[in-house]
Image (cartoon, rainbow, N blue to C red):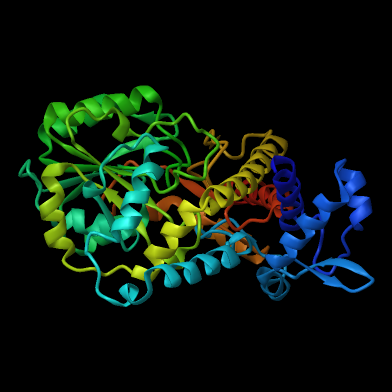
Length: 448
């Protein structure tokens, strides 16, 4: 069984990587059996499974051929655009067929119940399944402390508006940080201040001073694969942050939205070091499946449960999506897809690192965040670079990038000048060309 699954996974990976292009004929069953050193029946079974997943199709007395992917048409229309800007997952790796199966299974299992209002806390069977799922990330909690939300964004908005037991009102956010949440806080007039975080980490003494005298309700942080830096906190930093929370009665909102997209399986979140029930753990399923699913999870301390329930108000998350996710996790499809997408993103990140080493020998990019996993990397630029001119010149070369300016609070002064580079939509074969062009244009824009 393991041999069959390994062969199936390898074939699927080669199709996804473009080693077998749309319309290309695959090796014959006998040739493939010889190539993999296995029986003909094993290859026949693998081809049958790929055909079932609509990855390949067969023509009688001719052989098996690769099906065109949903993104192929888009790629042809958009031409050679190299997308280093998008934060959304790659359209070509979405598990459409697997999740369609789970939707059908969910309807068969739950029937009419899926068309009721449901529980505002989330589908009970999904929450029970999440208990063991989260435990794999060292997040141990009973189902009663788990809320299913309409993406992590809903949980963040509820937490920003609800009162906390410490009686404080100011939200502390890393700078830079998640731009959409910063804009929400500013638009709603919610008190917010910043604390500097760089690729080297965070100044724990400054953080302690903020906790001690800043009237902080909670500290919003991305402990791993930070957006936009791409970096993760060290074990010492995670332990220290958990300790400071208990010492000064400040809550931590840990946004672990990239939990499943990294190669570091030994990473324990801040939540795992919490001894005083001050950490709220958030996880998203959008980055691993697809954004339109709009499902997130909030794990709350006991004393916040009723207030969160009151402010969340209603069951506003699709029961059908929740039921399908429960099936998707329970039957092992989630783990399988997670490994596939993690491997693809890791390959792209390796290519990104290699391209930087190859083309940045003159040091035109002042600093690059040291990341091997996730999807983000920071390209720190000289202050002399005209960012508007740089992004326009890159756009004229069909390369889209995002300036770091929007990832800061409007009144925050200690800003770094950088590009946030995302590899989630940049194809593997485009990365070298894209990095070379960025470094060339940085050199031109620095000299003007």
